[in-house]
Structure formats: structure tokens, C-alpha cells
Length: 174
Image (cartoon, rainbow, N blue to C red; front, side, top):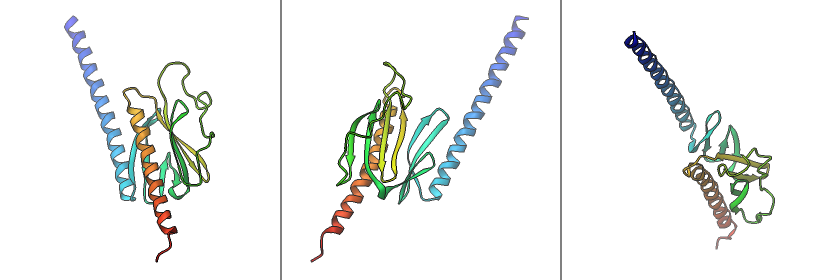
């Protein structure tokens, strides 16, 4: 009798494991399909950011960044900040748009955990139309920090490229 119960439990665990494997495979294939669709549309994934609902993608193409389906026109980006627990760690601003004291995120209003829990890493992108907060999370082992830095560096590099091109266009040809 004891062997029969152990066999049934083992069979149940085996079926449970098969269910988990098929679920993981389904989600992986869905992510691959989404990635192929983005690449076919001329976009590139800069970061896969874990959210409570799954993975959110920070994506770019020639004219825009995309966060949660919202386009952020590259030509309108005026400043970018990397935040830790809502406090700016690094800032890059376009010429004529010096960083001001505004733009810090109130940790309580943004839903940050209170106390000594995890450091929350985010990127705040300031545009002509307003600000976009890219929430990179609070995962341990520097994952969130690396995601936030990847987003920050990509936006900063695009701003520098755009501003260098604008600077060269302003120099009269001889």
C-alpha cells in the first residue's frame, strides 16, 4: 500500500513538472515571436525588464524609443537620469537644458518599498512632452542596476549622437 501511494505521488510530481516545462516553453516561444516581430519592424530590443506581469521590453528604432508601447521620440529627449530609490545617481542633459532639481521621484508616491528592502533602479527620461519613468526593478545581484544602466547609456548615447550632429550642422561651411 505504501509503495502504491509513493508511486501515485511520484506520478503526480512528474505530471506537475511536465506542466511547468510546457508552460515555460509556451512563454519562451511567445517572447521569441514578439522579438521576431520587433526585428521585422526594424526595431531592436535594448533591455528586457521584469515586471509583475512578465517581461517589458525597452525597444528602439531609428526615430523612437518604446517603453510599454509608448513611443518616445528621440529628437524630443532633453534629459535622462538614472535613479536609485528615486534619487538621481547620474544625469545627462542636452545643451540648453541643464539639469534642474526637478524630476526626482518621490519614493512613497512611486510605490517604492519603505525601509531597507531593495534598492530600486529606474531611468527618468525627460522629453518636450513630459517625463517617462522606466522602472527597472529591485532585483538583487545587480540585475536591475545593469538594466537601468543599459537604458540610461542607450538614451545618453543617442542624445550625444543627435547633439553632435546638430553641432556640426551649425558650423558654416567654408
